Image (tube, rainbow, N blue to C red):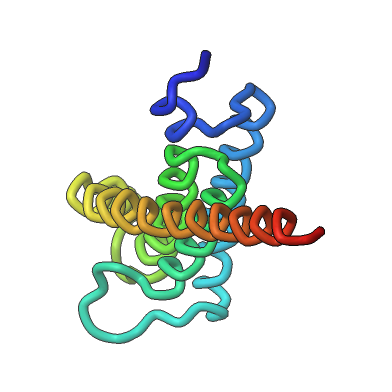
Length: 151
C-alpha cells in the first residue's frame, strides 16, 4: 500500500525511470533558463533583483504541469528551483563584471541567495502544484458528471 504522503511527494507512479527523467528535465530547465537570460530572451528588470519574473513564470508553469500529471511535489520544487538556478548562474557568471572566477563561484554558491531561491521555489512551487492538481480534479469531476447525466 502506498502512503498518501509518499504519493504526494514522489508521485502516483514513482519509479527509477520517472525519477531520472524528472531530474534530467530539471537540468534542462536550468540550462534553458540560463541560455534564455544570456541571449536576452528573458529580460532582467532593473533595480534590486530578488526573485526573477521570467524564471518564476517558467517555474509556475512547470510545477502546475507536474501537479496536473501527479508527478510529485518534490519534483515540482526541484524543477522550479532549477529555473532559479539558471537565472542565478547567468547573474553570477555573465552579469557580474570585474570579478574573478572564484568571486563568481562564491556568489553563485552563496547560501543566503540559494536559500532565498529555494524558499521561493518551495512556496510558489507548492501553490502552482496545487493549482495543477485542482485543475485535474475539476476536469475529472466535469467529465465524470457528464457521463452520469447521459442516458
